[in-house]
Image 1 (tube, one colour):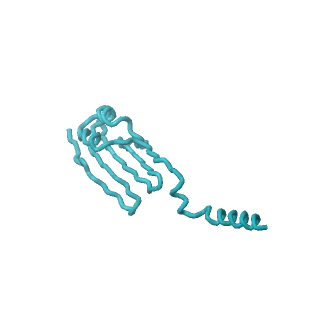
Image 2 (image 1 turned 60 degrees about the vertical axis):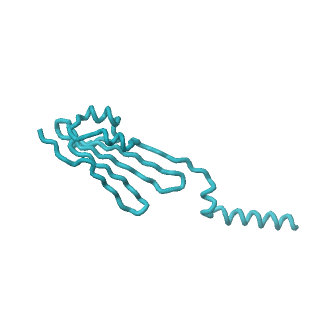
Image 3 (image 1 turned 30 degrees about the vertical axis):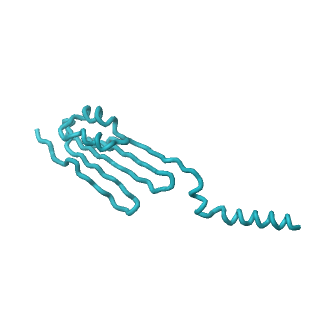
Length: 128
């Protein structure tokens, strides 16, 4: 009788604590990195006036090219550390119709506090 009571108490305790958030940290979650990982040194190598081929050689192929023909390239890097919030960095490059780099916009998306930090590396227009 005492054994049945012990088994019932243990089972009910396990069922009640199965959804506790304290046990979530015990489970291993790997870091998930997706996209184009670019170091600040890589981004510093590009300059306005470079051709699309030069940029692709320096940074690699972009994650996304604007499908509507505006000559905009997006280099997106998304990092999801184990038990932390997702962090995303986006490098947006705009080219003119001749294929020359005209604008560099680097956005660090931080969902922790809900705001974006945009650092304009170079936003000058190249005139021929």
